[in-house]
Image 1 (cartoon, rainbow, N blue to C red):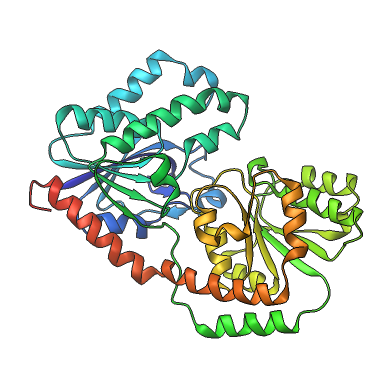
Image 2 (image 1 turned 90 degrees about the vertical axis):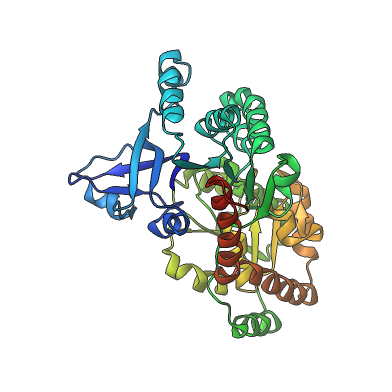
Length: 397
């Protein structure tokens, strides 16, 4: 049986007809589906990358299209005109529906407009389908812009309906998305963050580092520095608040791409630029070494699903704090959570963490991160998708 994979991530094509996907997808991801299905048809949007832009394409994931077909969806988000175009929306809906055929199973990655259409149509014709819930549209849109705030209620309701209708549902969180977007179908919590096997020597080195620490505490956040909802500005403001109280014992290191001018200007205005370090983009093979050099990780985001950066920090035994956003509280525990945008709570938490507490945090984080080792997640994922495949083929699950 074939599979149609419904999502609106962007896909690029070179001059020879090869396809390339972004960081969220790779051939290895699609190979997981091909363990259960014969071919995949991808419903995706076209990336605005020229076919001869070899430099941009080299940063993407090249697909093996021997068993993968691609259908391009109109990009409703390209402009306000596109978003409200009745003609374009009709074409969008037509393409989604005509690709849901009797010989294809349906997997939807949501939230997405195409996913909403596919879920309603599958329900109408009595076709079982699986939904992968990877984020919260309310948090994403509400914290984006005025336009986002207008769109958030409708997107929240659409996603609620999609998850409710799902025959099978996979959540990347253990609790957060399940509470906000419950399903009546079979469900499983399977993170899309995967770690290589973890060596206990990592924790031993972390504990030694904490015991021997003296001087300033290096705070770390790994996230794009030009995206406001990542919330780094609240940490910078907390540093200024602490400095006003005579505490300059923290140095904030930010790894991530994008224009850092807004955060840099903020640090200068608040008089803490000497406590702020912009690391730029770090290749993934250098990220763990960078985390090992840090003393405390902090994720002040206004929107998240289950953040990879926090899990990776935990896997290095790094003590961590985070905002009450998405799946962060279920990773770190309530004691190390602060309210979103709350500078006062950040400023209160930072100096309150003792060396003994950091040792405890390091041990707890390292042990929790073991739940995200690839081998464990792959087995759980294989079993759940195999059950869905049997249902899609009309066999006993």
